[in-house]
Image 1 (spheres, rainbow, N blue to C red):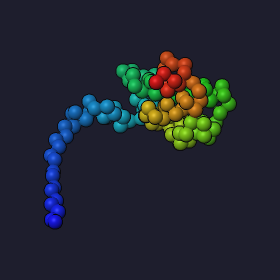
Image 2 (cartoon, rainbow, N blue to C red; image 1 turned 90 degrees about the vertical axis):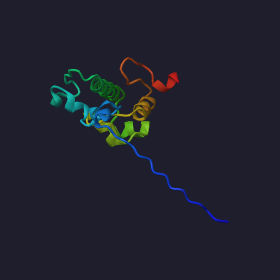
Image 3 (cartoon, one colour; image 1 turned 45 degrees about the vertical axis):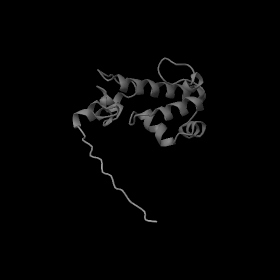
Image 4 (cartoon, rainbow, N blue to C red; image 1 turned 120 degrees about the vertical axis):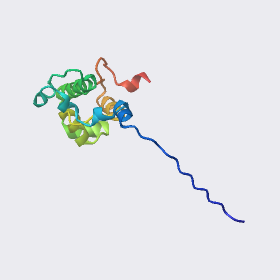
Length: 126
């Protein structure tokens, strides 16, 4: 019995202008704090026309508040949430764009909502 191997090549056209419109595109090439008018003032920096960076800023502020209220350091937050300690530090510093899984794990680990306008972890509503 003979085995037949078929090779298929797919041509993909990549439009650079489309990349800029895609989720995450160029908008995520710079960290949120660098999009602020006054990056050195993070997380209290002022933003103009950067709504997604303001969301990350609000999450960082909420996380800072919760850490202070609960008396937690980076290692303890990492242990409670399962989020790498460096990822927590990067979020607090505004040097990264947290993904949904990171935010959800932090909320579940701390037992509070961190996303703007929420009180409970988002996973409680699913």
